[in-house]
Length: 288
Ligand code: FE
Ligand code: FE
Image (cartoon, rainbow, N blue to C red; front, side, top):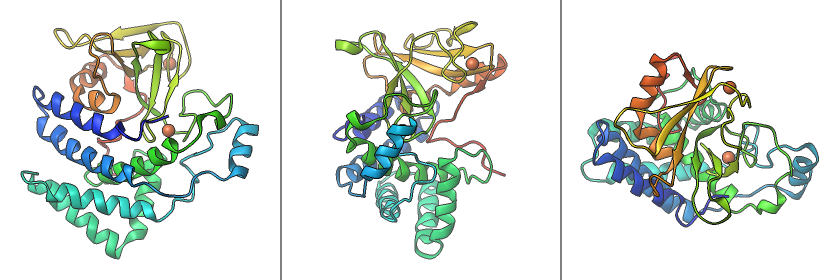
């Protein structure tokens, strides 16, 4: 389960580190400010968690107890969004385009909250249409705070013993990428990382995280790029997800490193593979 004391601050630090050498430094820095605000917000998190009935039902059906789709969100998530927007818009040096997006979103919070609820639904359902690409990262960031808070306060012993393949056992969302960890019991094990609630779950290495095939798995990397980053492709379903190796770089962070390694996505696109799922802080399908 996510470590609430550091989950977003570690992401912010990593984004800043990656920005030092990135062609998309401006965007990474903007997302770092957003992650700072997420850390503040998650520290103050309070919203009702899963009821005993819901946990029992999830356990008996092997379903994620904090399932994002269909969850009755407490309206407090919109206060979290407001706090994020206030923070980012108030940072000096933030590009005016970003401030404009924040201002427009605050307007919508005041006068058109329903449309934000709809956008939230579309983001949680990982739809590729009906998404306002400029507003999406901010709304998604607020939803991340909400679900990371829920997951961080959830007792992992209450998770179902089995859960559906390929989705987060806590909230049912898709993983953003995976990390091979070092140290302790986790040494050498690969964990999938939830794009929404930051929960991590084990998946045997050399296995497609999308279709579970273990044959025709290949690894790709950018020539001369970081050895800590590869794309794991599957010739069965023709998708890929990135895999980060802590052994090569101790500070890899799934959301940040995935975002900063767009060049690898371009390479994979050229090789005919599609991403199995997107990055929560970058929504490219802006128009429906
Ligand atoms: Fe999750
Ligand atoms: Fe596959």
